[in-house]
Length: 406
Ligand code: NAP
Ligand code: MG
Image (cartoon, rainbow, N blue to C red; front, side, top):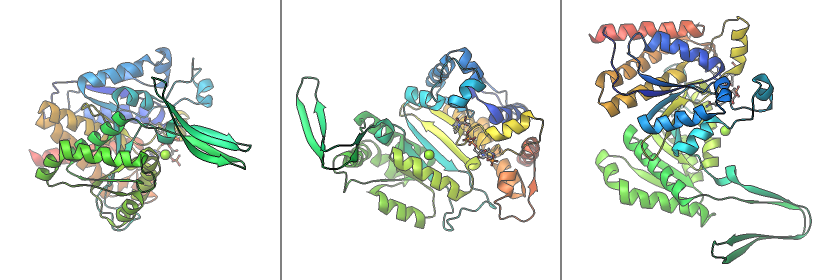
């Protein structure tokens, strides 16, 4: 087979630890034998971030604006332990946070559904995509411990000096208080990202918040979604046969449990944080969860939802065998390659992405899998493969698929 050509580069962001090892294996065994891989490479591994004072992360995000599609390996977010482990100049911010701040947007997470890894919710037949707003609310809050009698007020002083206040609570006894905010523009881009992604992936959008209790704050989210839907998306949704609806978050939660999946669940920041862990673990495994950052300006960054699998990496360094699941990282590549193919009208490239995903699913459904899945599969007598063996088994399936299609 002749190698598939790429007209525009993908932005490739390499990362850390075990996922960096998998990254190289995936390229070597599953990509470069089939594709004339055209990437602009940025090494976001912590060593290189430290060497460049984290400039490489900013450069990679800027390159994503230029080329529109990026694929990212998991990276270490430094903490105190990493400061000494990597002899860091400073405690750099999370690369995902830096990239998100530059690209703006919404993170969509969806499970990869295969037979043999059954969701605990028995009626879930199709993936549920969780769209998490990634700005504000309690993640950018101010909190106070109240330890003597007094009152807490919300005060807004406008730039021209006008003051608006409202009483939060009179405290006669100790208590706690918190202030938080969000931005109209950020809520708007959240809504647009959800609706665009829905059109892209042909799924309905469900959005839930608590506007009956939060009559200004959550009500704003509800109103912004509705306005943007009516003004910019209703027609496109109707002609695609898709629907958008808003309901109270508690009603949405109840409906999600009864549904069969196949929709996008838009969540405010905190709801998305909590619910994405619930949805991913109910679907089986963090190692089977894809993640894509979609910016309102049409930039896409694909990655796995899990981290760098540090414990496996330390075993790998000691020369021990690992059985680390590369599925979500492979799907980060296929997501990016398919999107590159769509944007460039490169049918062969998009088809390759479809084939590779099919090969991964067939491999697992034939009983060959990594240890994490073998522990939870409903298939009898699964064959447990190590990290490289699994990737080679996928390659075998991929070759079979190509042999059948020519
Ligand atoms: P993690 O890397 O997701 O791993 C947590 C545990 O989950 C692993 O120890 C492993 O369990 C299991 N696991 C996760 N992915 C797996 C896979 N692909 N195959 C098999 N098992 C898998 O989370 P962490 O250990 O909390 O974080 C490690 C580093 O990743 C941290 O430095 C953190 O900053 C970073 N991180 C990065 C991102 C990102 O770049 N998007 C996201 C989260 C965390 P067992 O050890 O029991 O097998
Ligand atoms: Mg969380």
